[in-house]
Length: 185
Image (cartoon, rainbow, N blue to C red):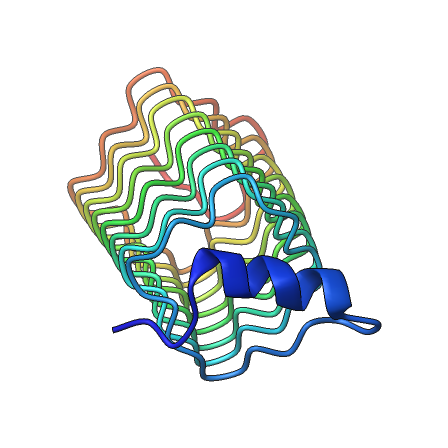
């Protein structure tokens, strides 16, 4: 059961004079689509199955947050901190994660189709079975990431750092690996 409703979150946003601090809050299964949550602090928050479709979460701190099954389609997460966050089975289709901190993130089974991850840091991330058809991951760090069975069809990995990444069973048809660091055919 969520600690706050959508209308309560909207009121808190309107009253906030500094970045809204919702550390550890339970916002599971509520609809926050389209809200401006830029800069919000949601560290260690329970956001399971929460709808953030089209929301602005730029520069938000989601360190350690549980976003399993959340809908972040089309959301703006530019420069967001998602370190150690759980995004298993989340929908990130078309989301902007450019310059984001996704170190040790769990993206197992996540939908990252058309997502923008330019210069994102996914070091040590778990992307097992993730679907990234036509995602833009150019110049991103996937150092030591687990990409086992990931669908990278048509993905732009140009100049991505793949040193130590596990690509066992990954689908790379049509992927752009030009200048990728640590990629051995």
